[in-house]
Length: 177
Length: 443
Image (cartoon, rainbow over all chains, first blue to last red):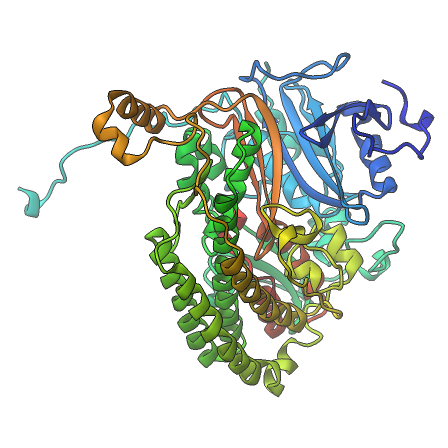
């Protein structure tokens, strides 16, 4: 992967089959540009795209791919357990780009996009809450949907769910005697 | 694979509540005080304005909600007040979290609609539409035109009912209790039509991957045209009751002001974004369904205040009615679902005479259908803004991951900006103008 600084800013993503975007491997999935990146180049890529006109962050979410053997990634990019998926919009040119960032399962930490897109604050908290991915530089990385004392991150694939035994028994009491 | 849960707890697990200034991260302090732009666009708020030296006895941190009647459900706001002036705001959410994204991973694509329809419960047909469109995108199923137009009709009808409910609650929050009665009355007319079409007033599960559950009932054109005839005079009554009324304008104009740059930076969409003057509507700017074949205006505001957001929604009802009239004229004939044996159950009549059809029907509703591996993001314009669905399939009959981008969830982040420097009483107007639905926020 080439350094982001070496790529000229005049590179566009509107080609029908974009080979790479700002030095990161890209593909066209059903007409939409998808850029693959690892943690090291993630922040620089997002900043470059922001400067290119993608001023609106529509969505940020995490995926735990540990139980998904069907994933296909471009050569040279190792599949990791987590993916952070960011959807950016260029409102002026009506373009959309999706970034898929590979995040290792052992120490899932990615730079926060709060400085570039303040609107990702709640989305990153949600990804942390449900997946346990840490966002360095996030101002307030606390649980957002689950209570403070919750153990574990429930949208991980190894999180035991549906394991709480449900007891079915006849109600007790005078009316049911 | 090492478990990082313990690691996280030390580093990041902290209080979700609003903390004292001395205990708050400086960046977070700025955010809670409504400064969002530390970008080249220019600072909206000078960091020097935020003092960390304010004594604990000079300000007061209070809770608004989660059981406050004006918070539209269980939204809890923590406000730092100096007298009646709001200095910092932090929304605390999650009281309605039921893990619907996790639930979705245990439901087949056939069952998924019943799950997503309960997210934004005031706009259930939009949830079903975005989920169905994401599934169809991965399947590569092409819909017959009538299915597309039925979806568009139901989306617009649902937009009217959702905005009417906003009219009702917005009036209620600001003391115009009669408005609540009127808004609910008109919404009931719209819901009666939806009930006739889908069988249910809410949570319809009518729009499904592959088309819709049934065709429109006989005489639907008359029902739609009746709505288009009855509602505009009532909307004119709203104009008299609210738009030109001094108390209402006094309570909403200049309240909860947001600028273009702030709205874009915070990811706000829908009427909240359009009120600031940003001309952006996914129906027009990224056409889906058949919105490029109908004529409608995107309504935008200029001031970015609570009044603009009210006026935009009122006008959007009129635009939706205009769209509904066009759809009645243009509705194509044909099938209401794709005749793809993979996703479409056989007709009821065939089940009685063909064993294969019975087996096919049984398999489809027990095992569901398999969706090719892949991932997609589909977004539509719900009454509250961009409603997105990120869907990952591993080739099975259940989604590997389904994420819904809820517009209310993201729009709530504008509250610290809107409320800073305002009065507590105006907070009610600002919250109401975002029109958050907590089912959509917490999912």
